[in-house]
Length: 162
Image (cartoon, rainbow, N blue to C red):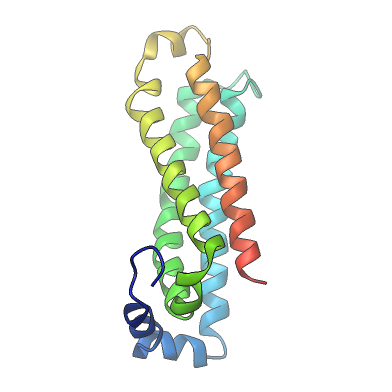
């Protein structure tokens, strides 16, 4: 058992008909990896563009306008990342369930989600500062945190592949 997840449960996921089919397919696992990577590009690409704007790059683009254009793509990326990630996990659930790098990745994702939620529910709601073009310190901190969390998540994902 790792982090309260029974080994039998992980084995059940890994031995499910769907996981076995994915593992045995010549093209399905690589196709899922491609979908997962495209989703990551959308999620992280949009987030990084927005984060860099918060840090003072591309000052001619209003923050709210950039948010309207790139953040929906990040949300769409989640539609690819989450299901493909769950399916990829299912093919190697027992080993991943015991791997501290996998749990570090999940922890980083959770903190990244909290960072996004706090930013959008609190920091980005105070529109007065945004209209003057001044980026609040909290927004800059959220941007730095976002960049570091996504880099850590991506690094963990790559480390899991080896």
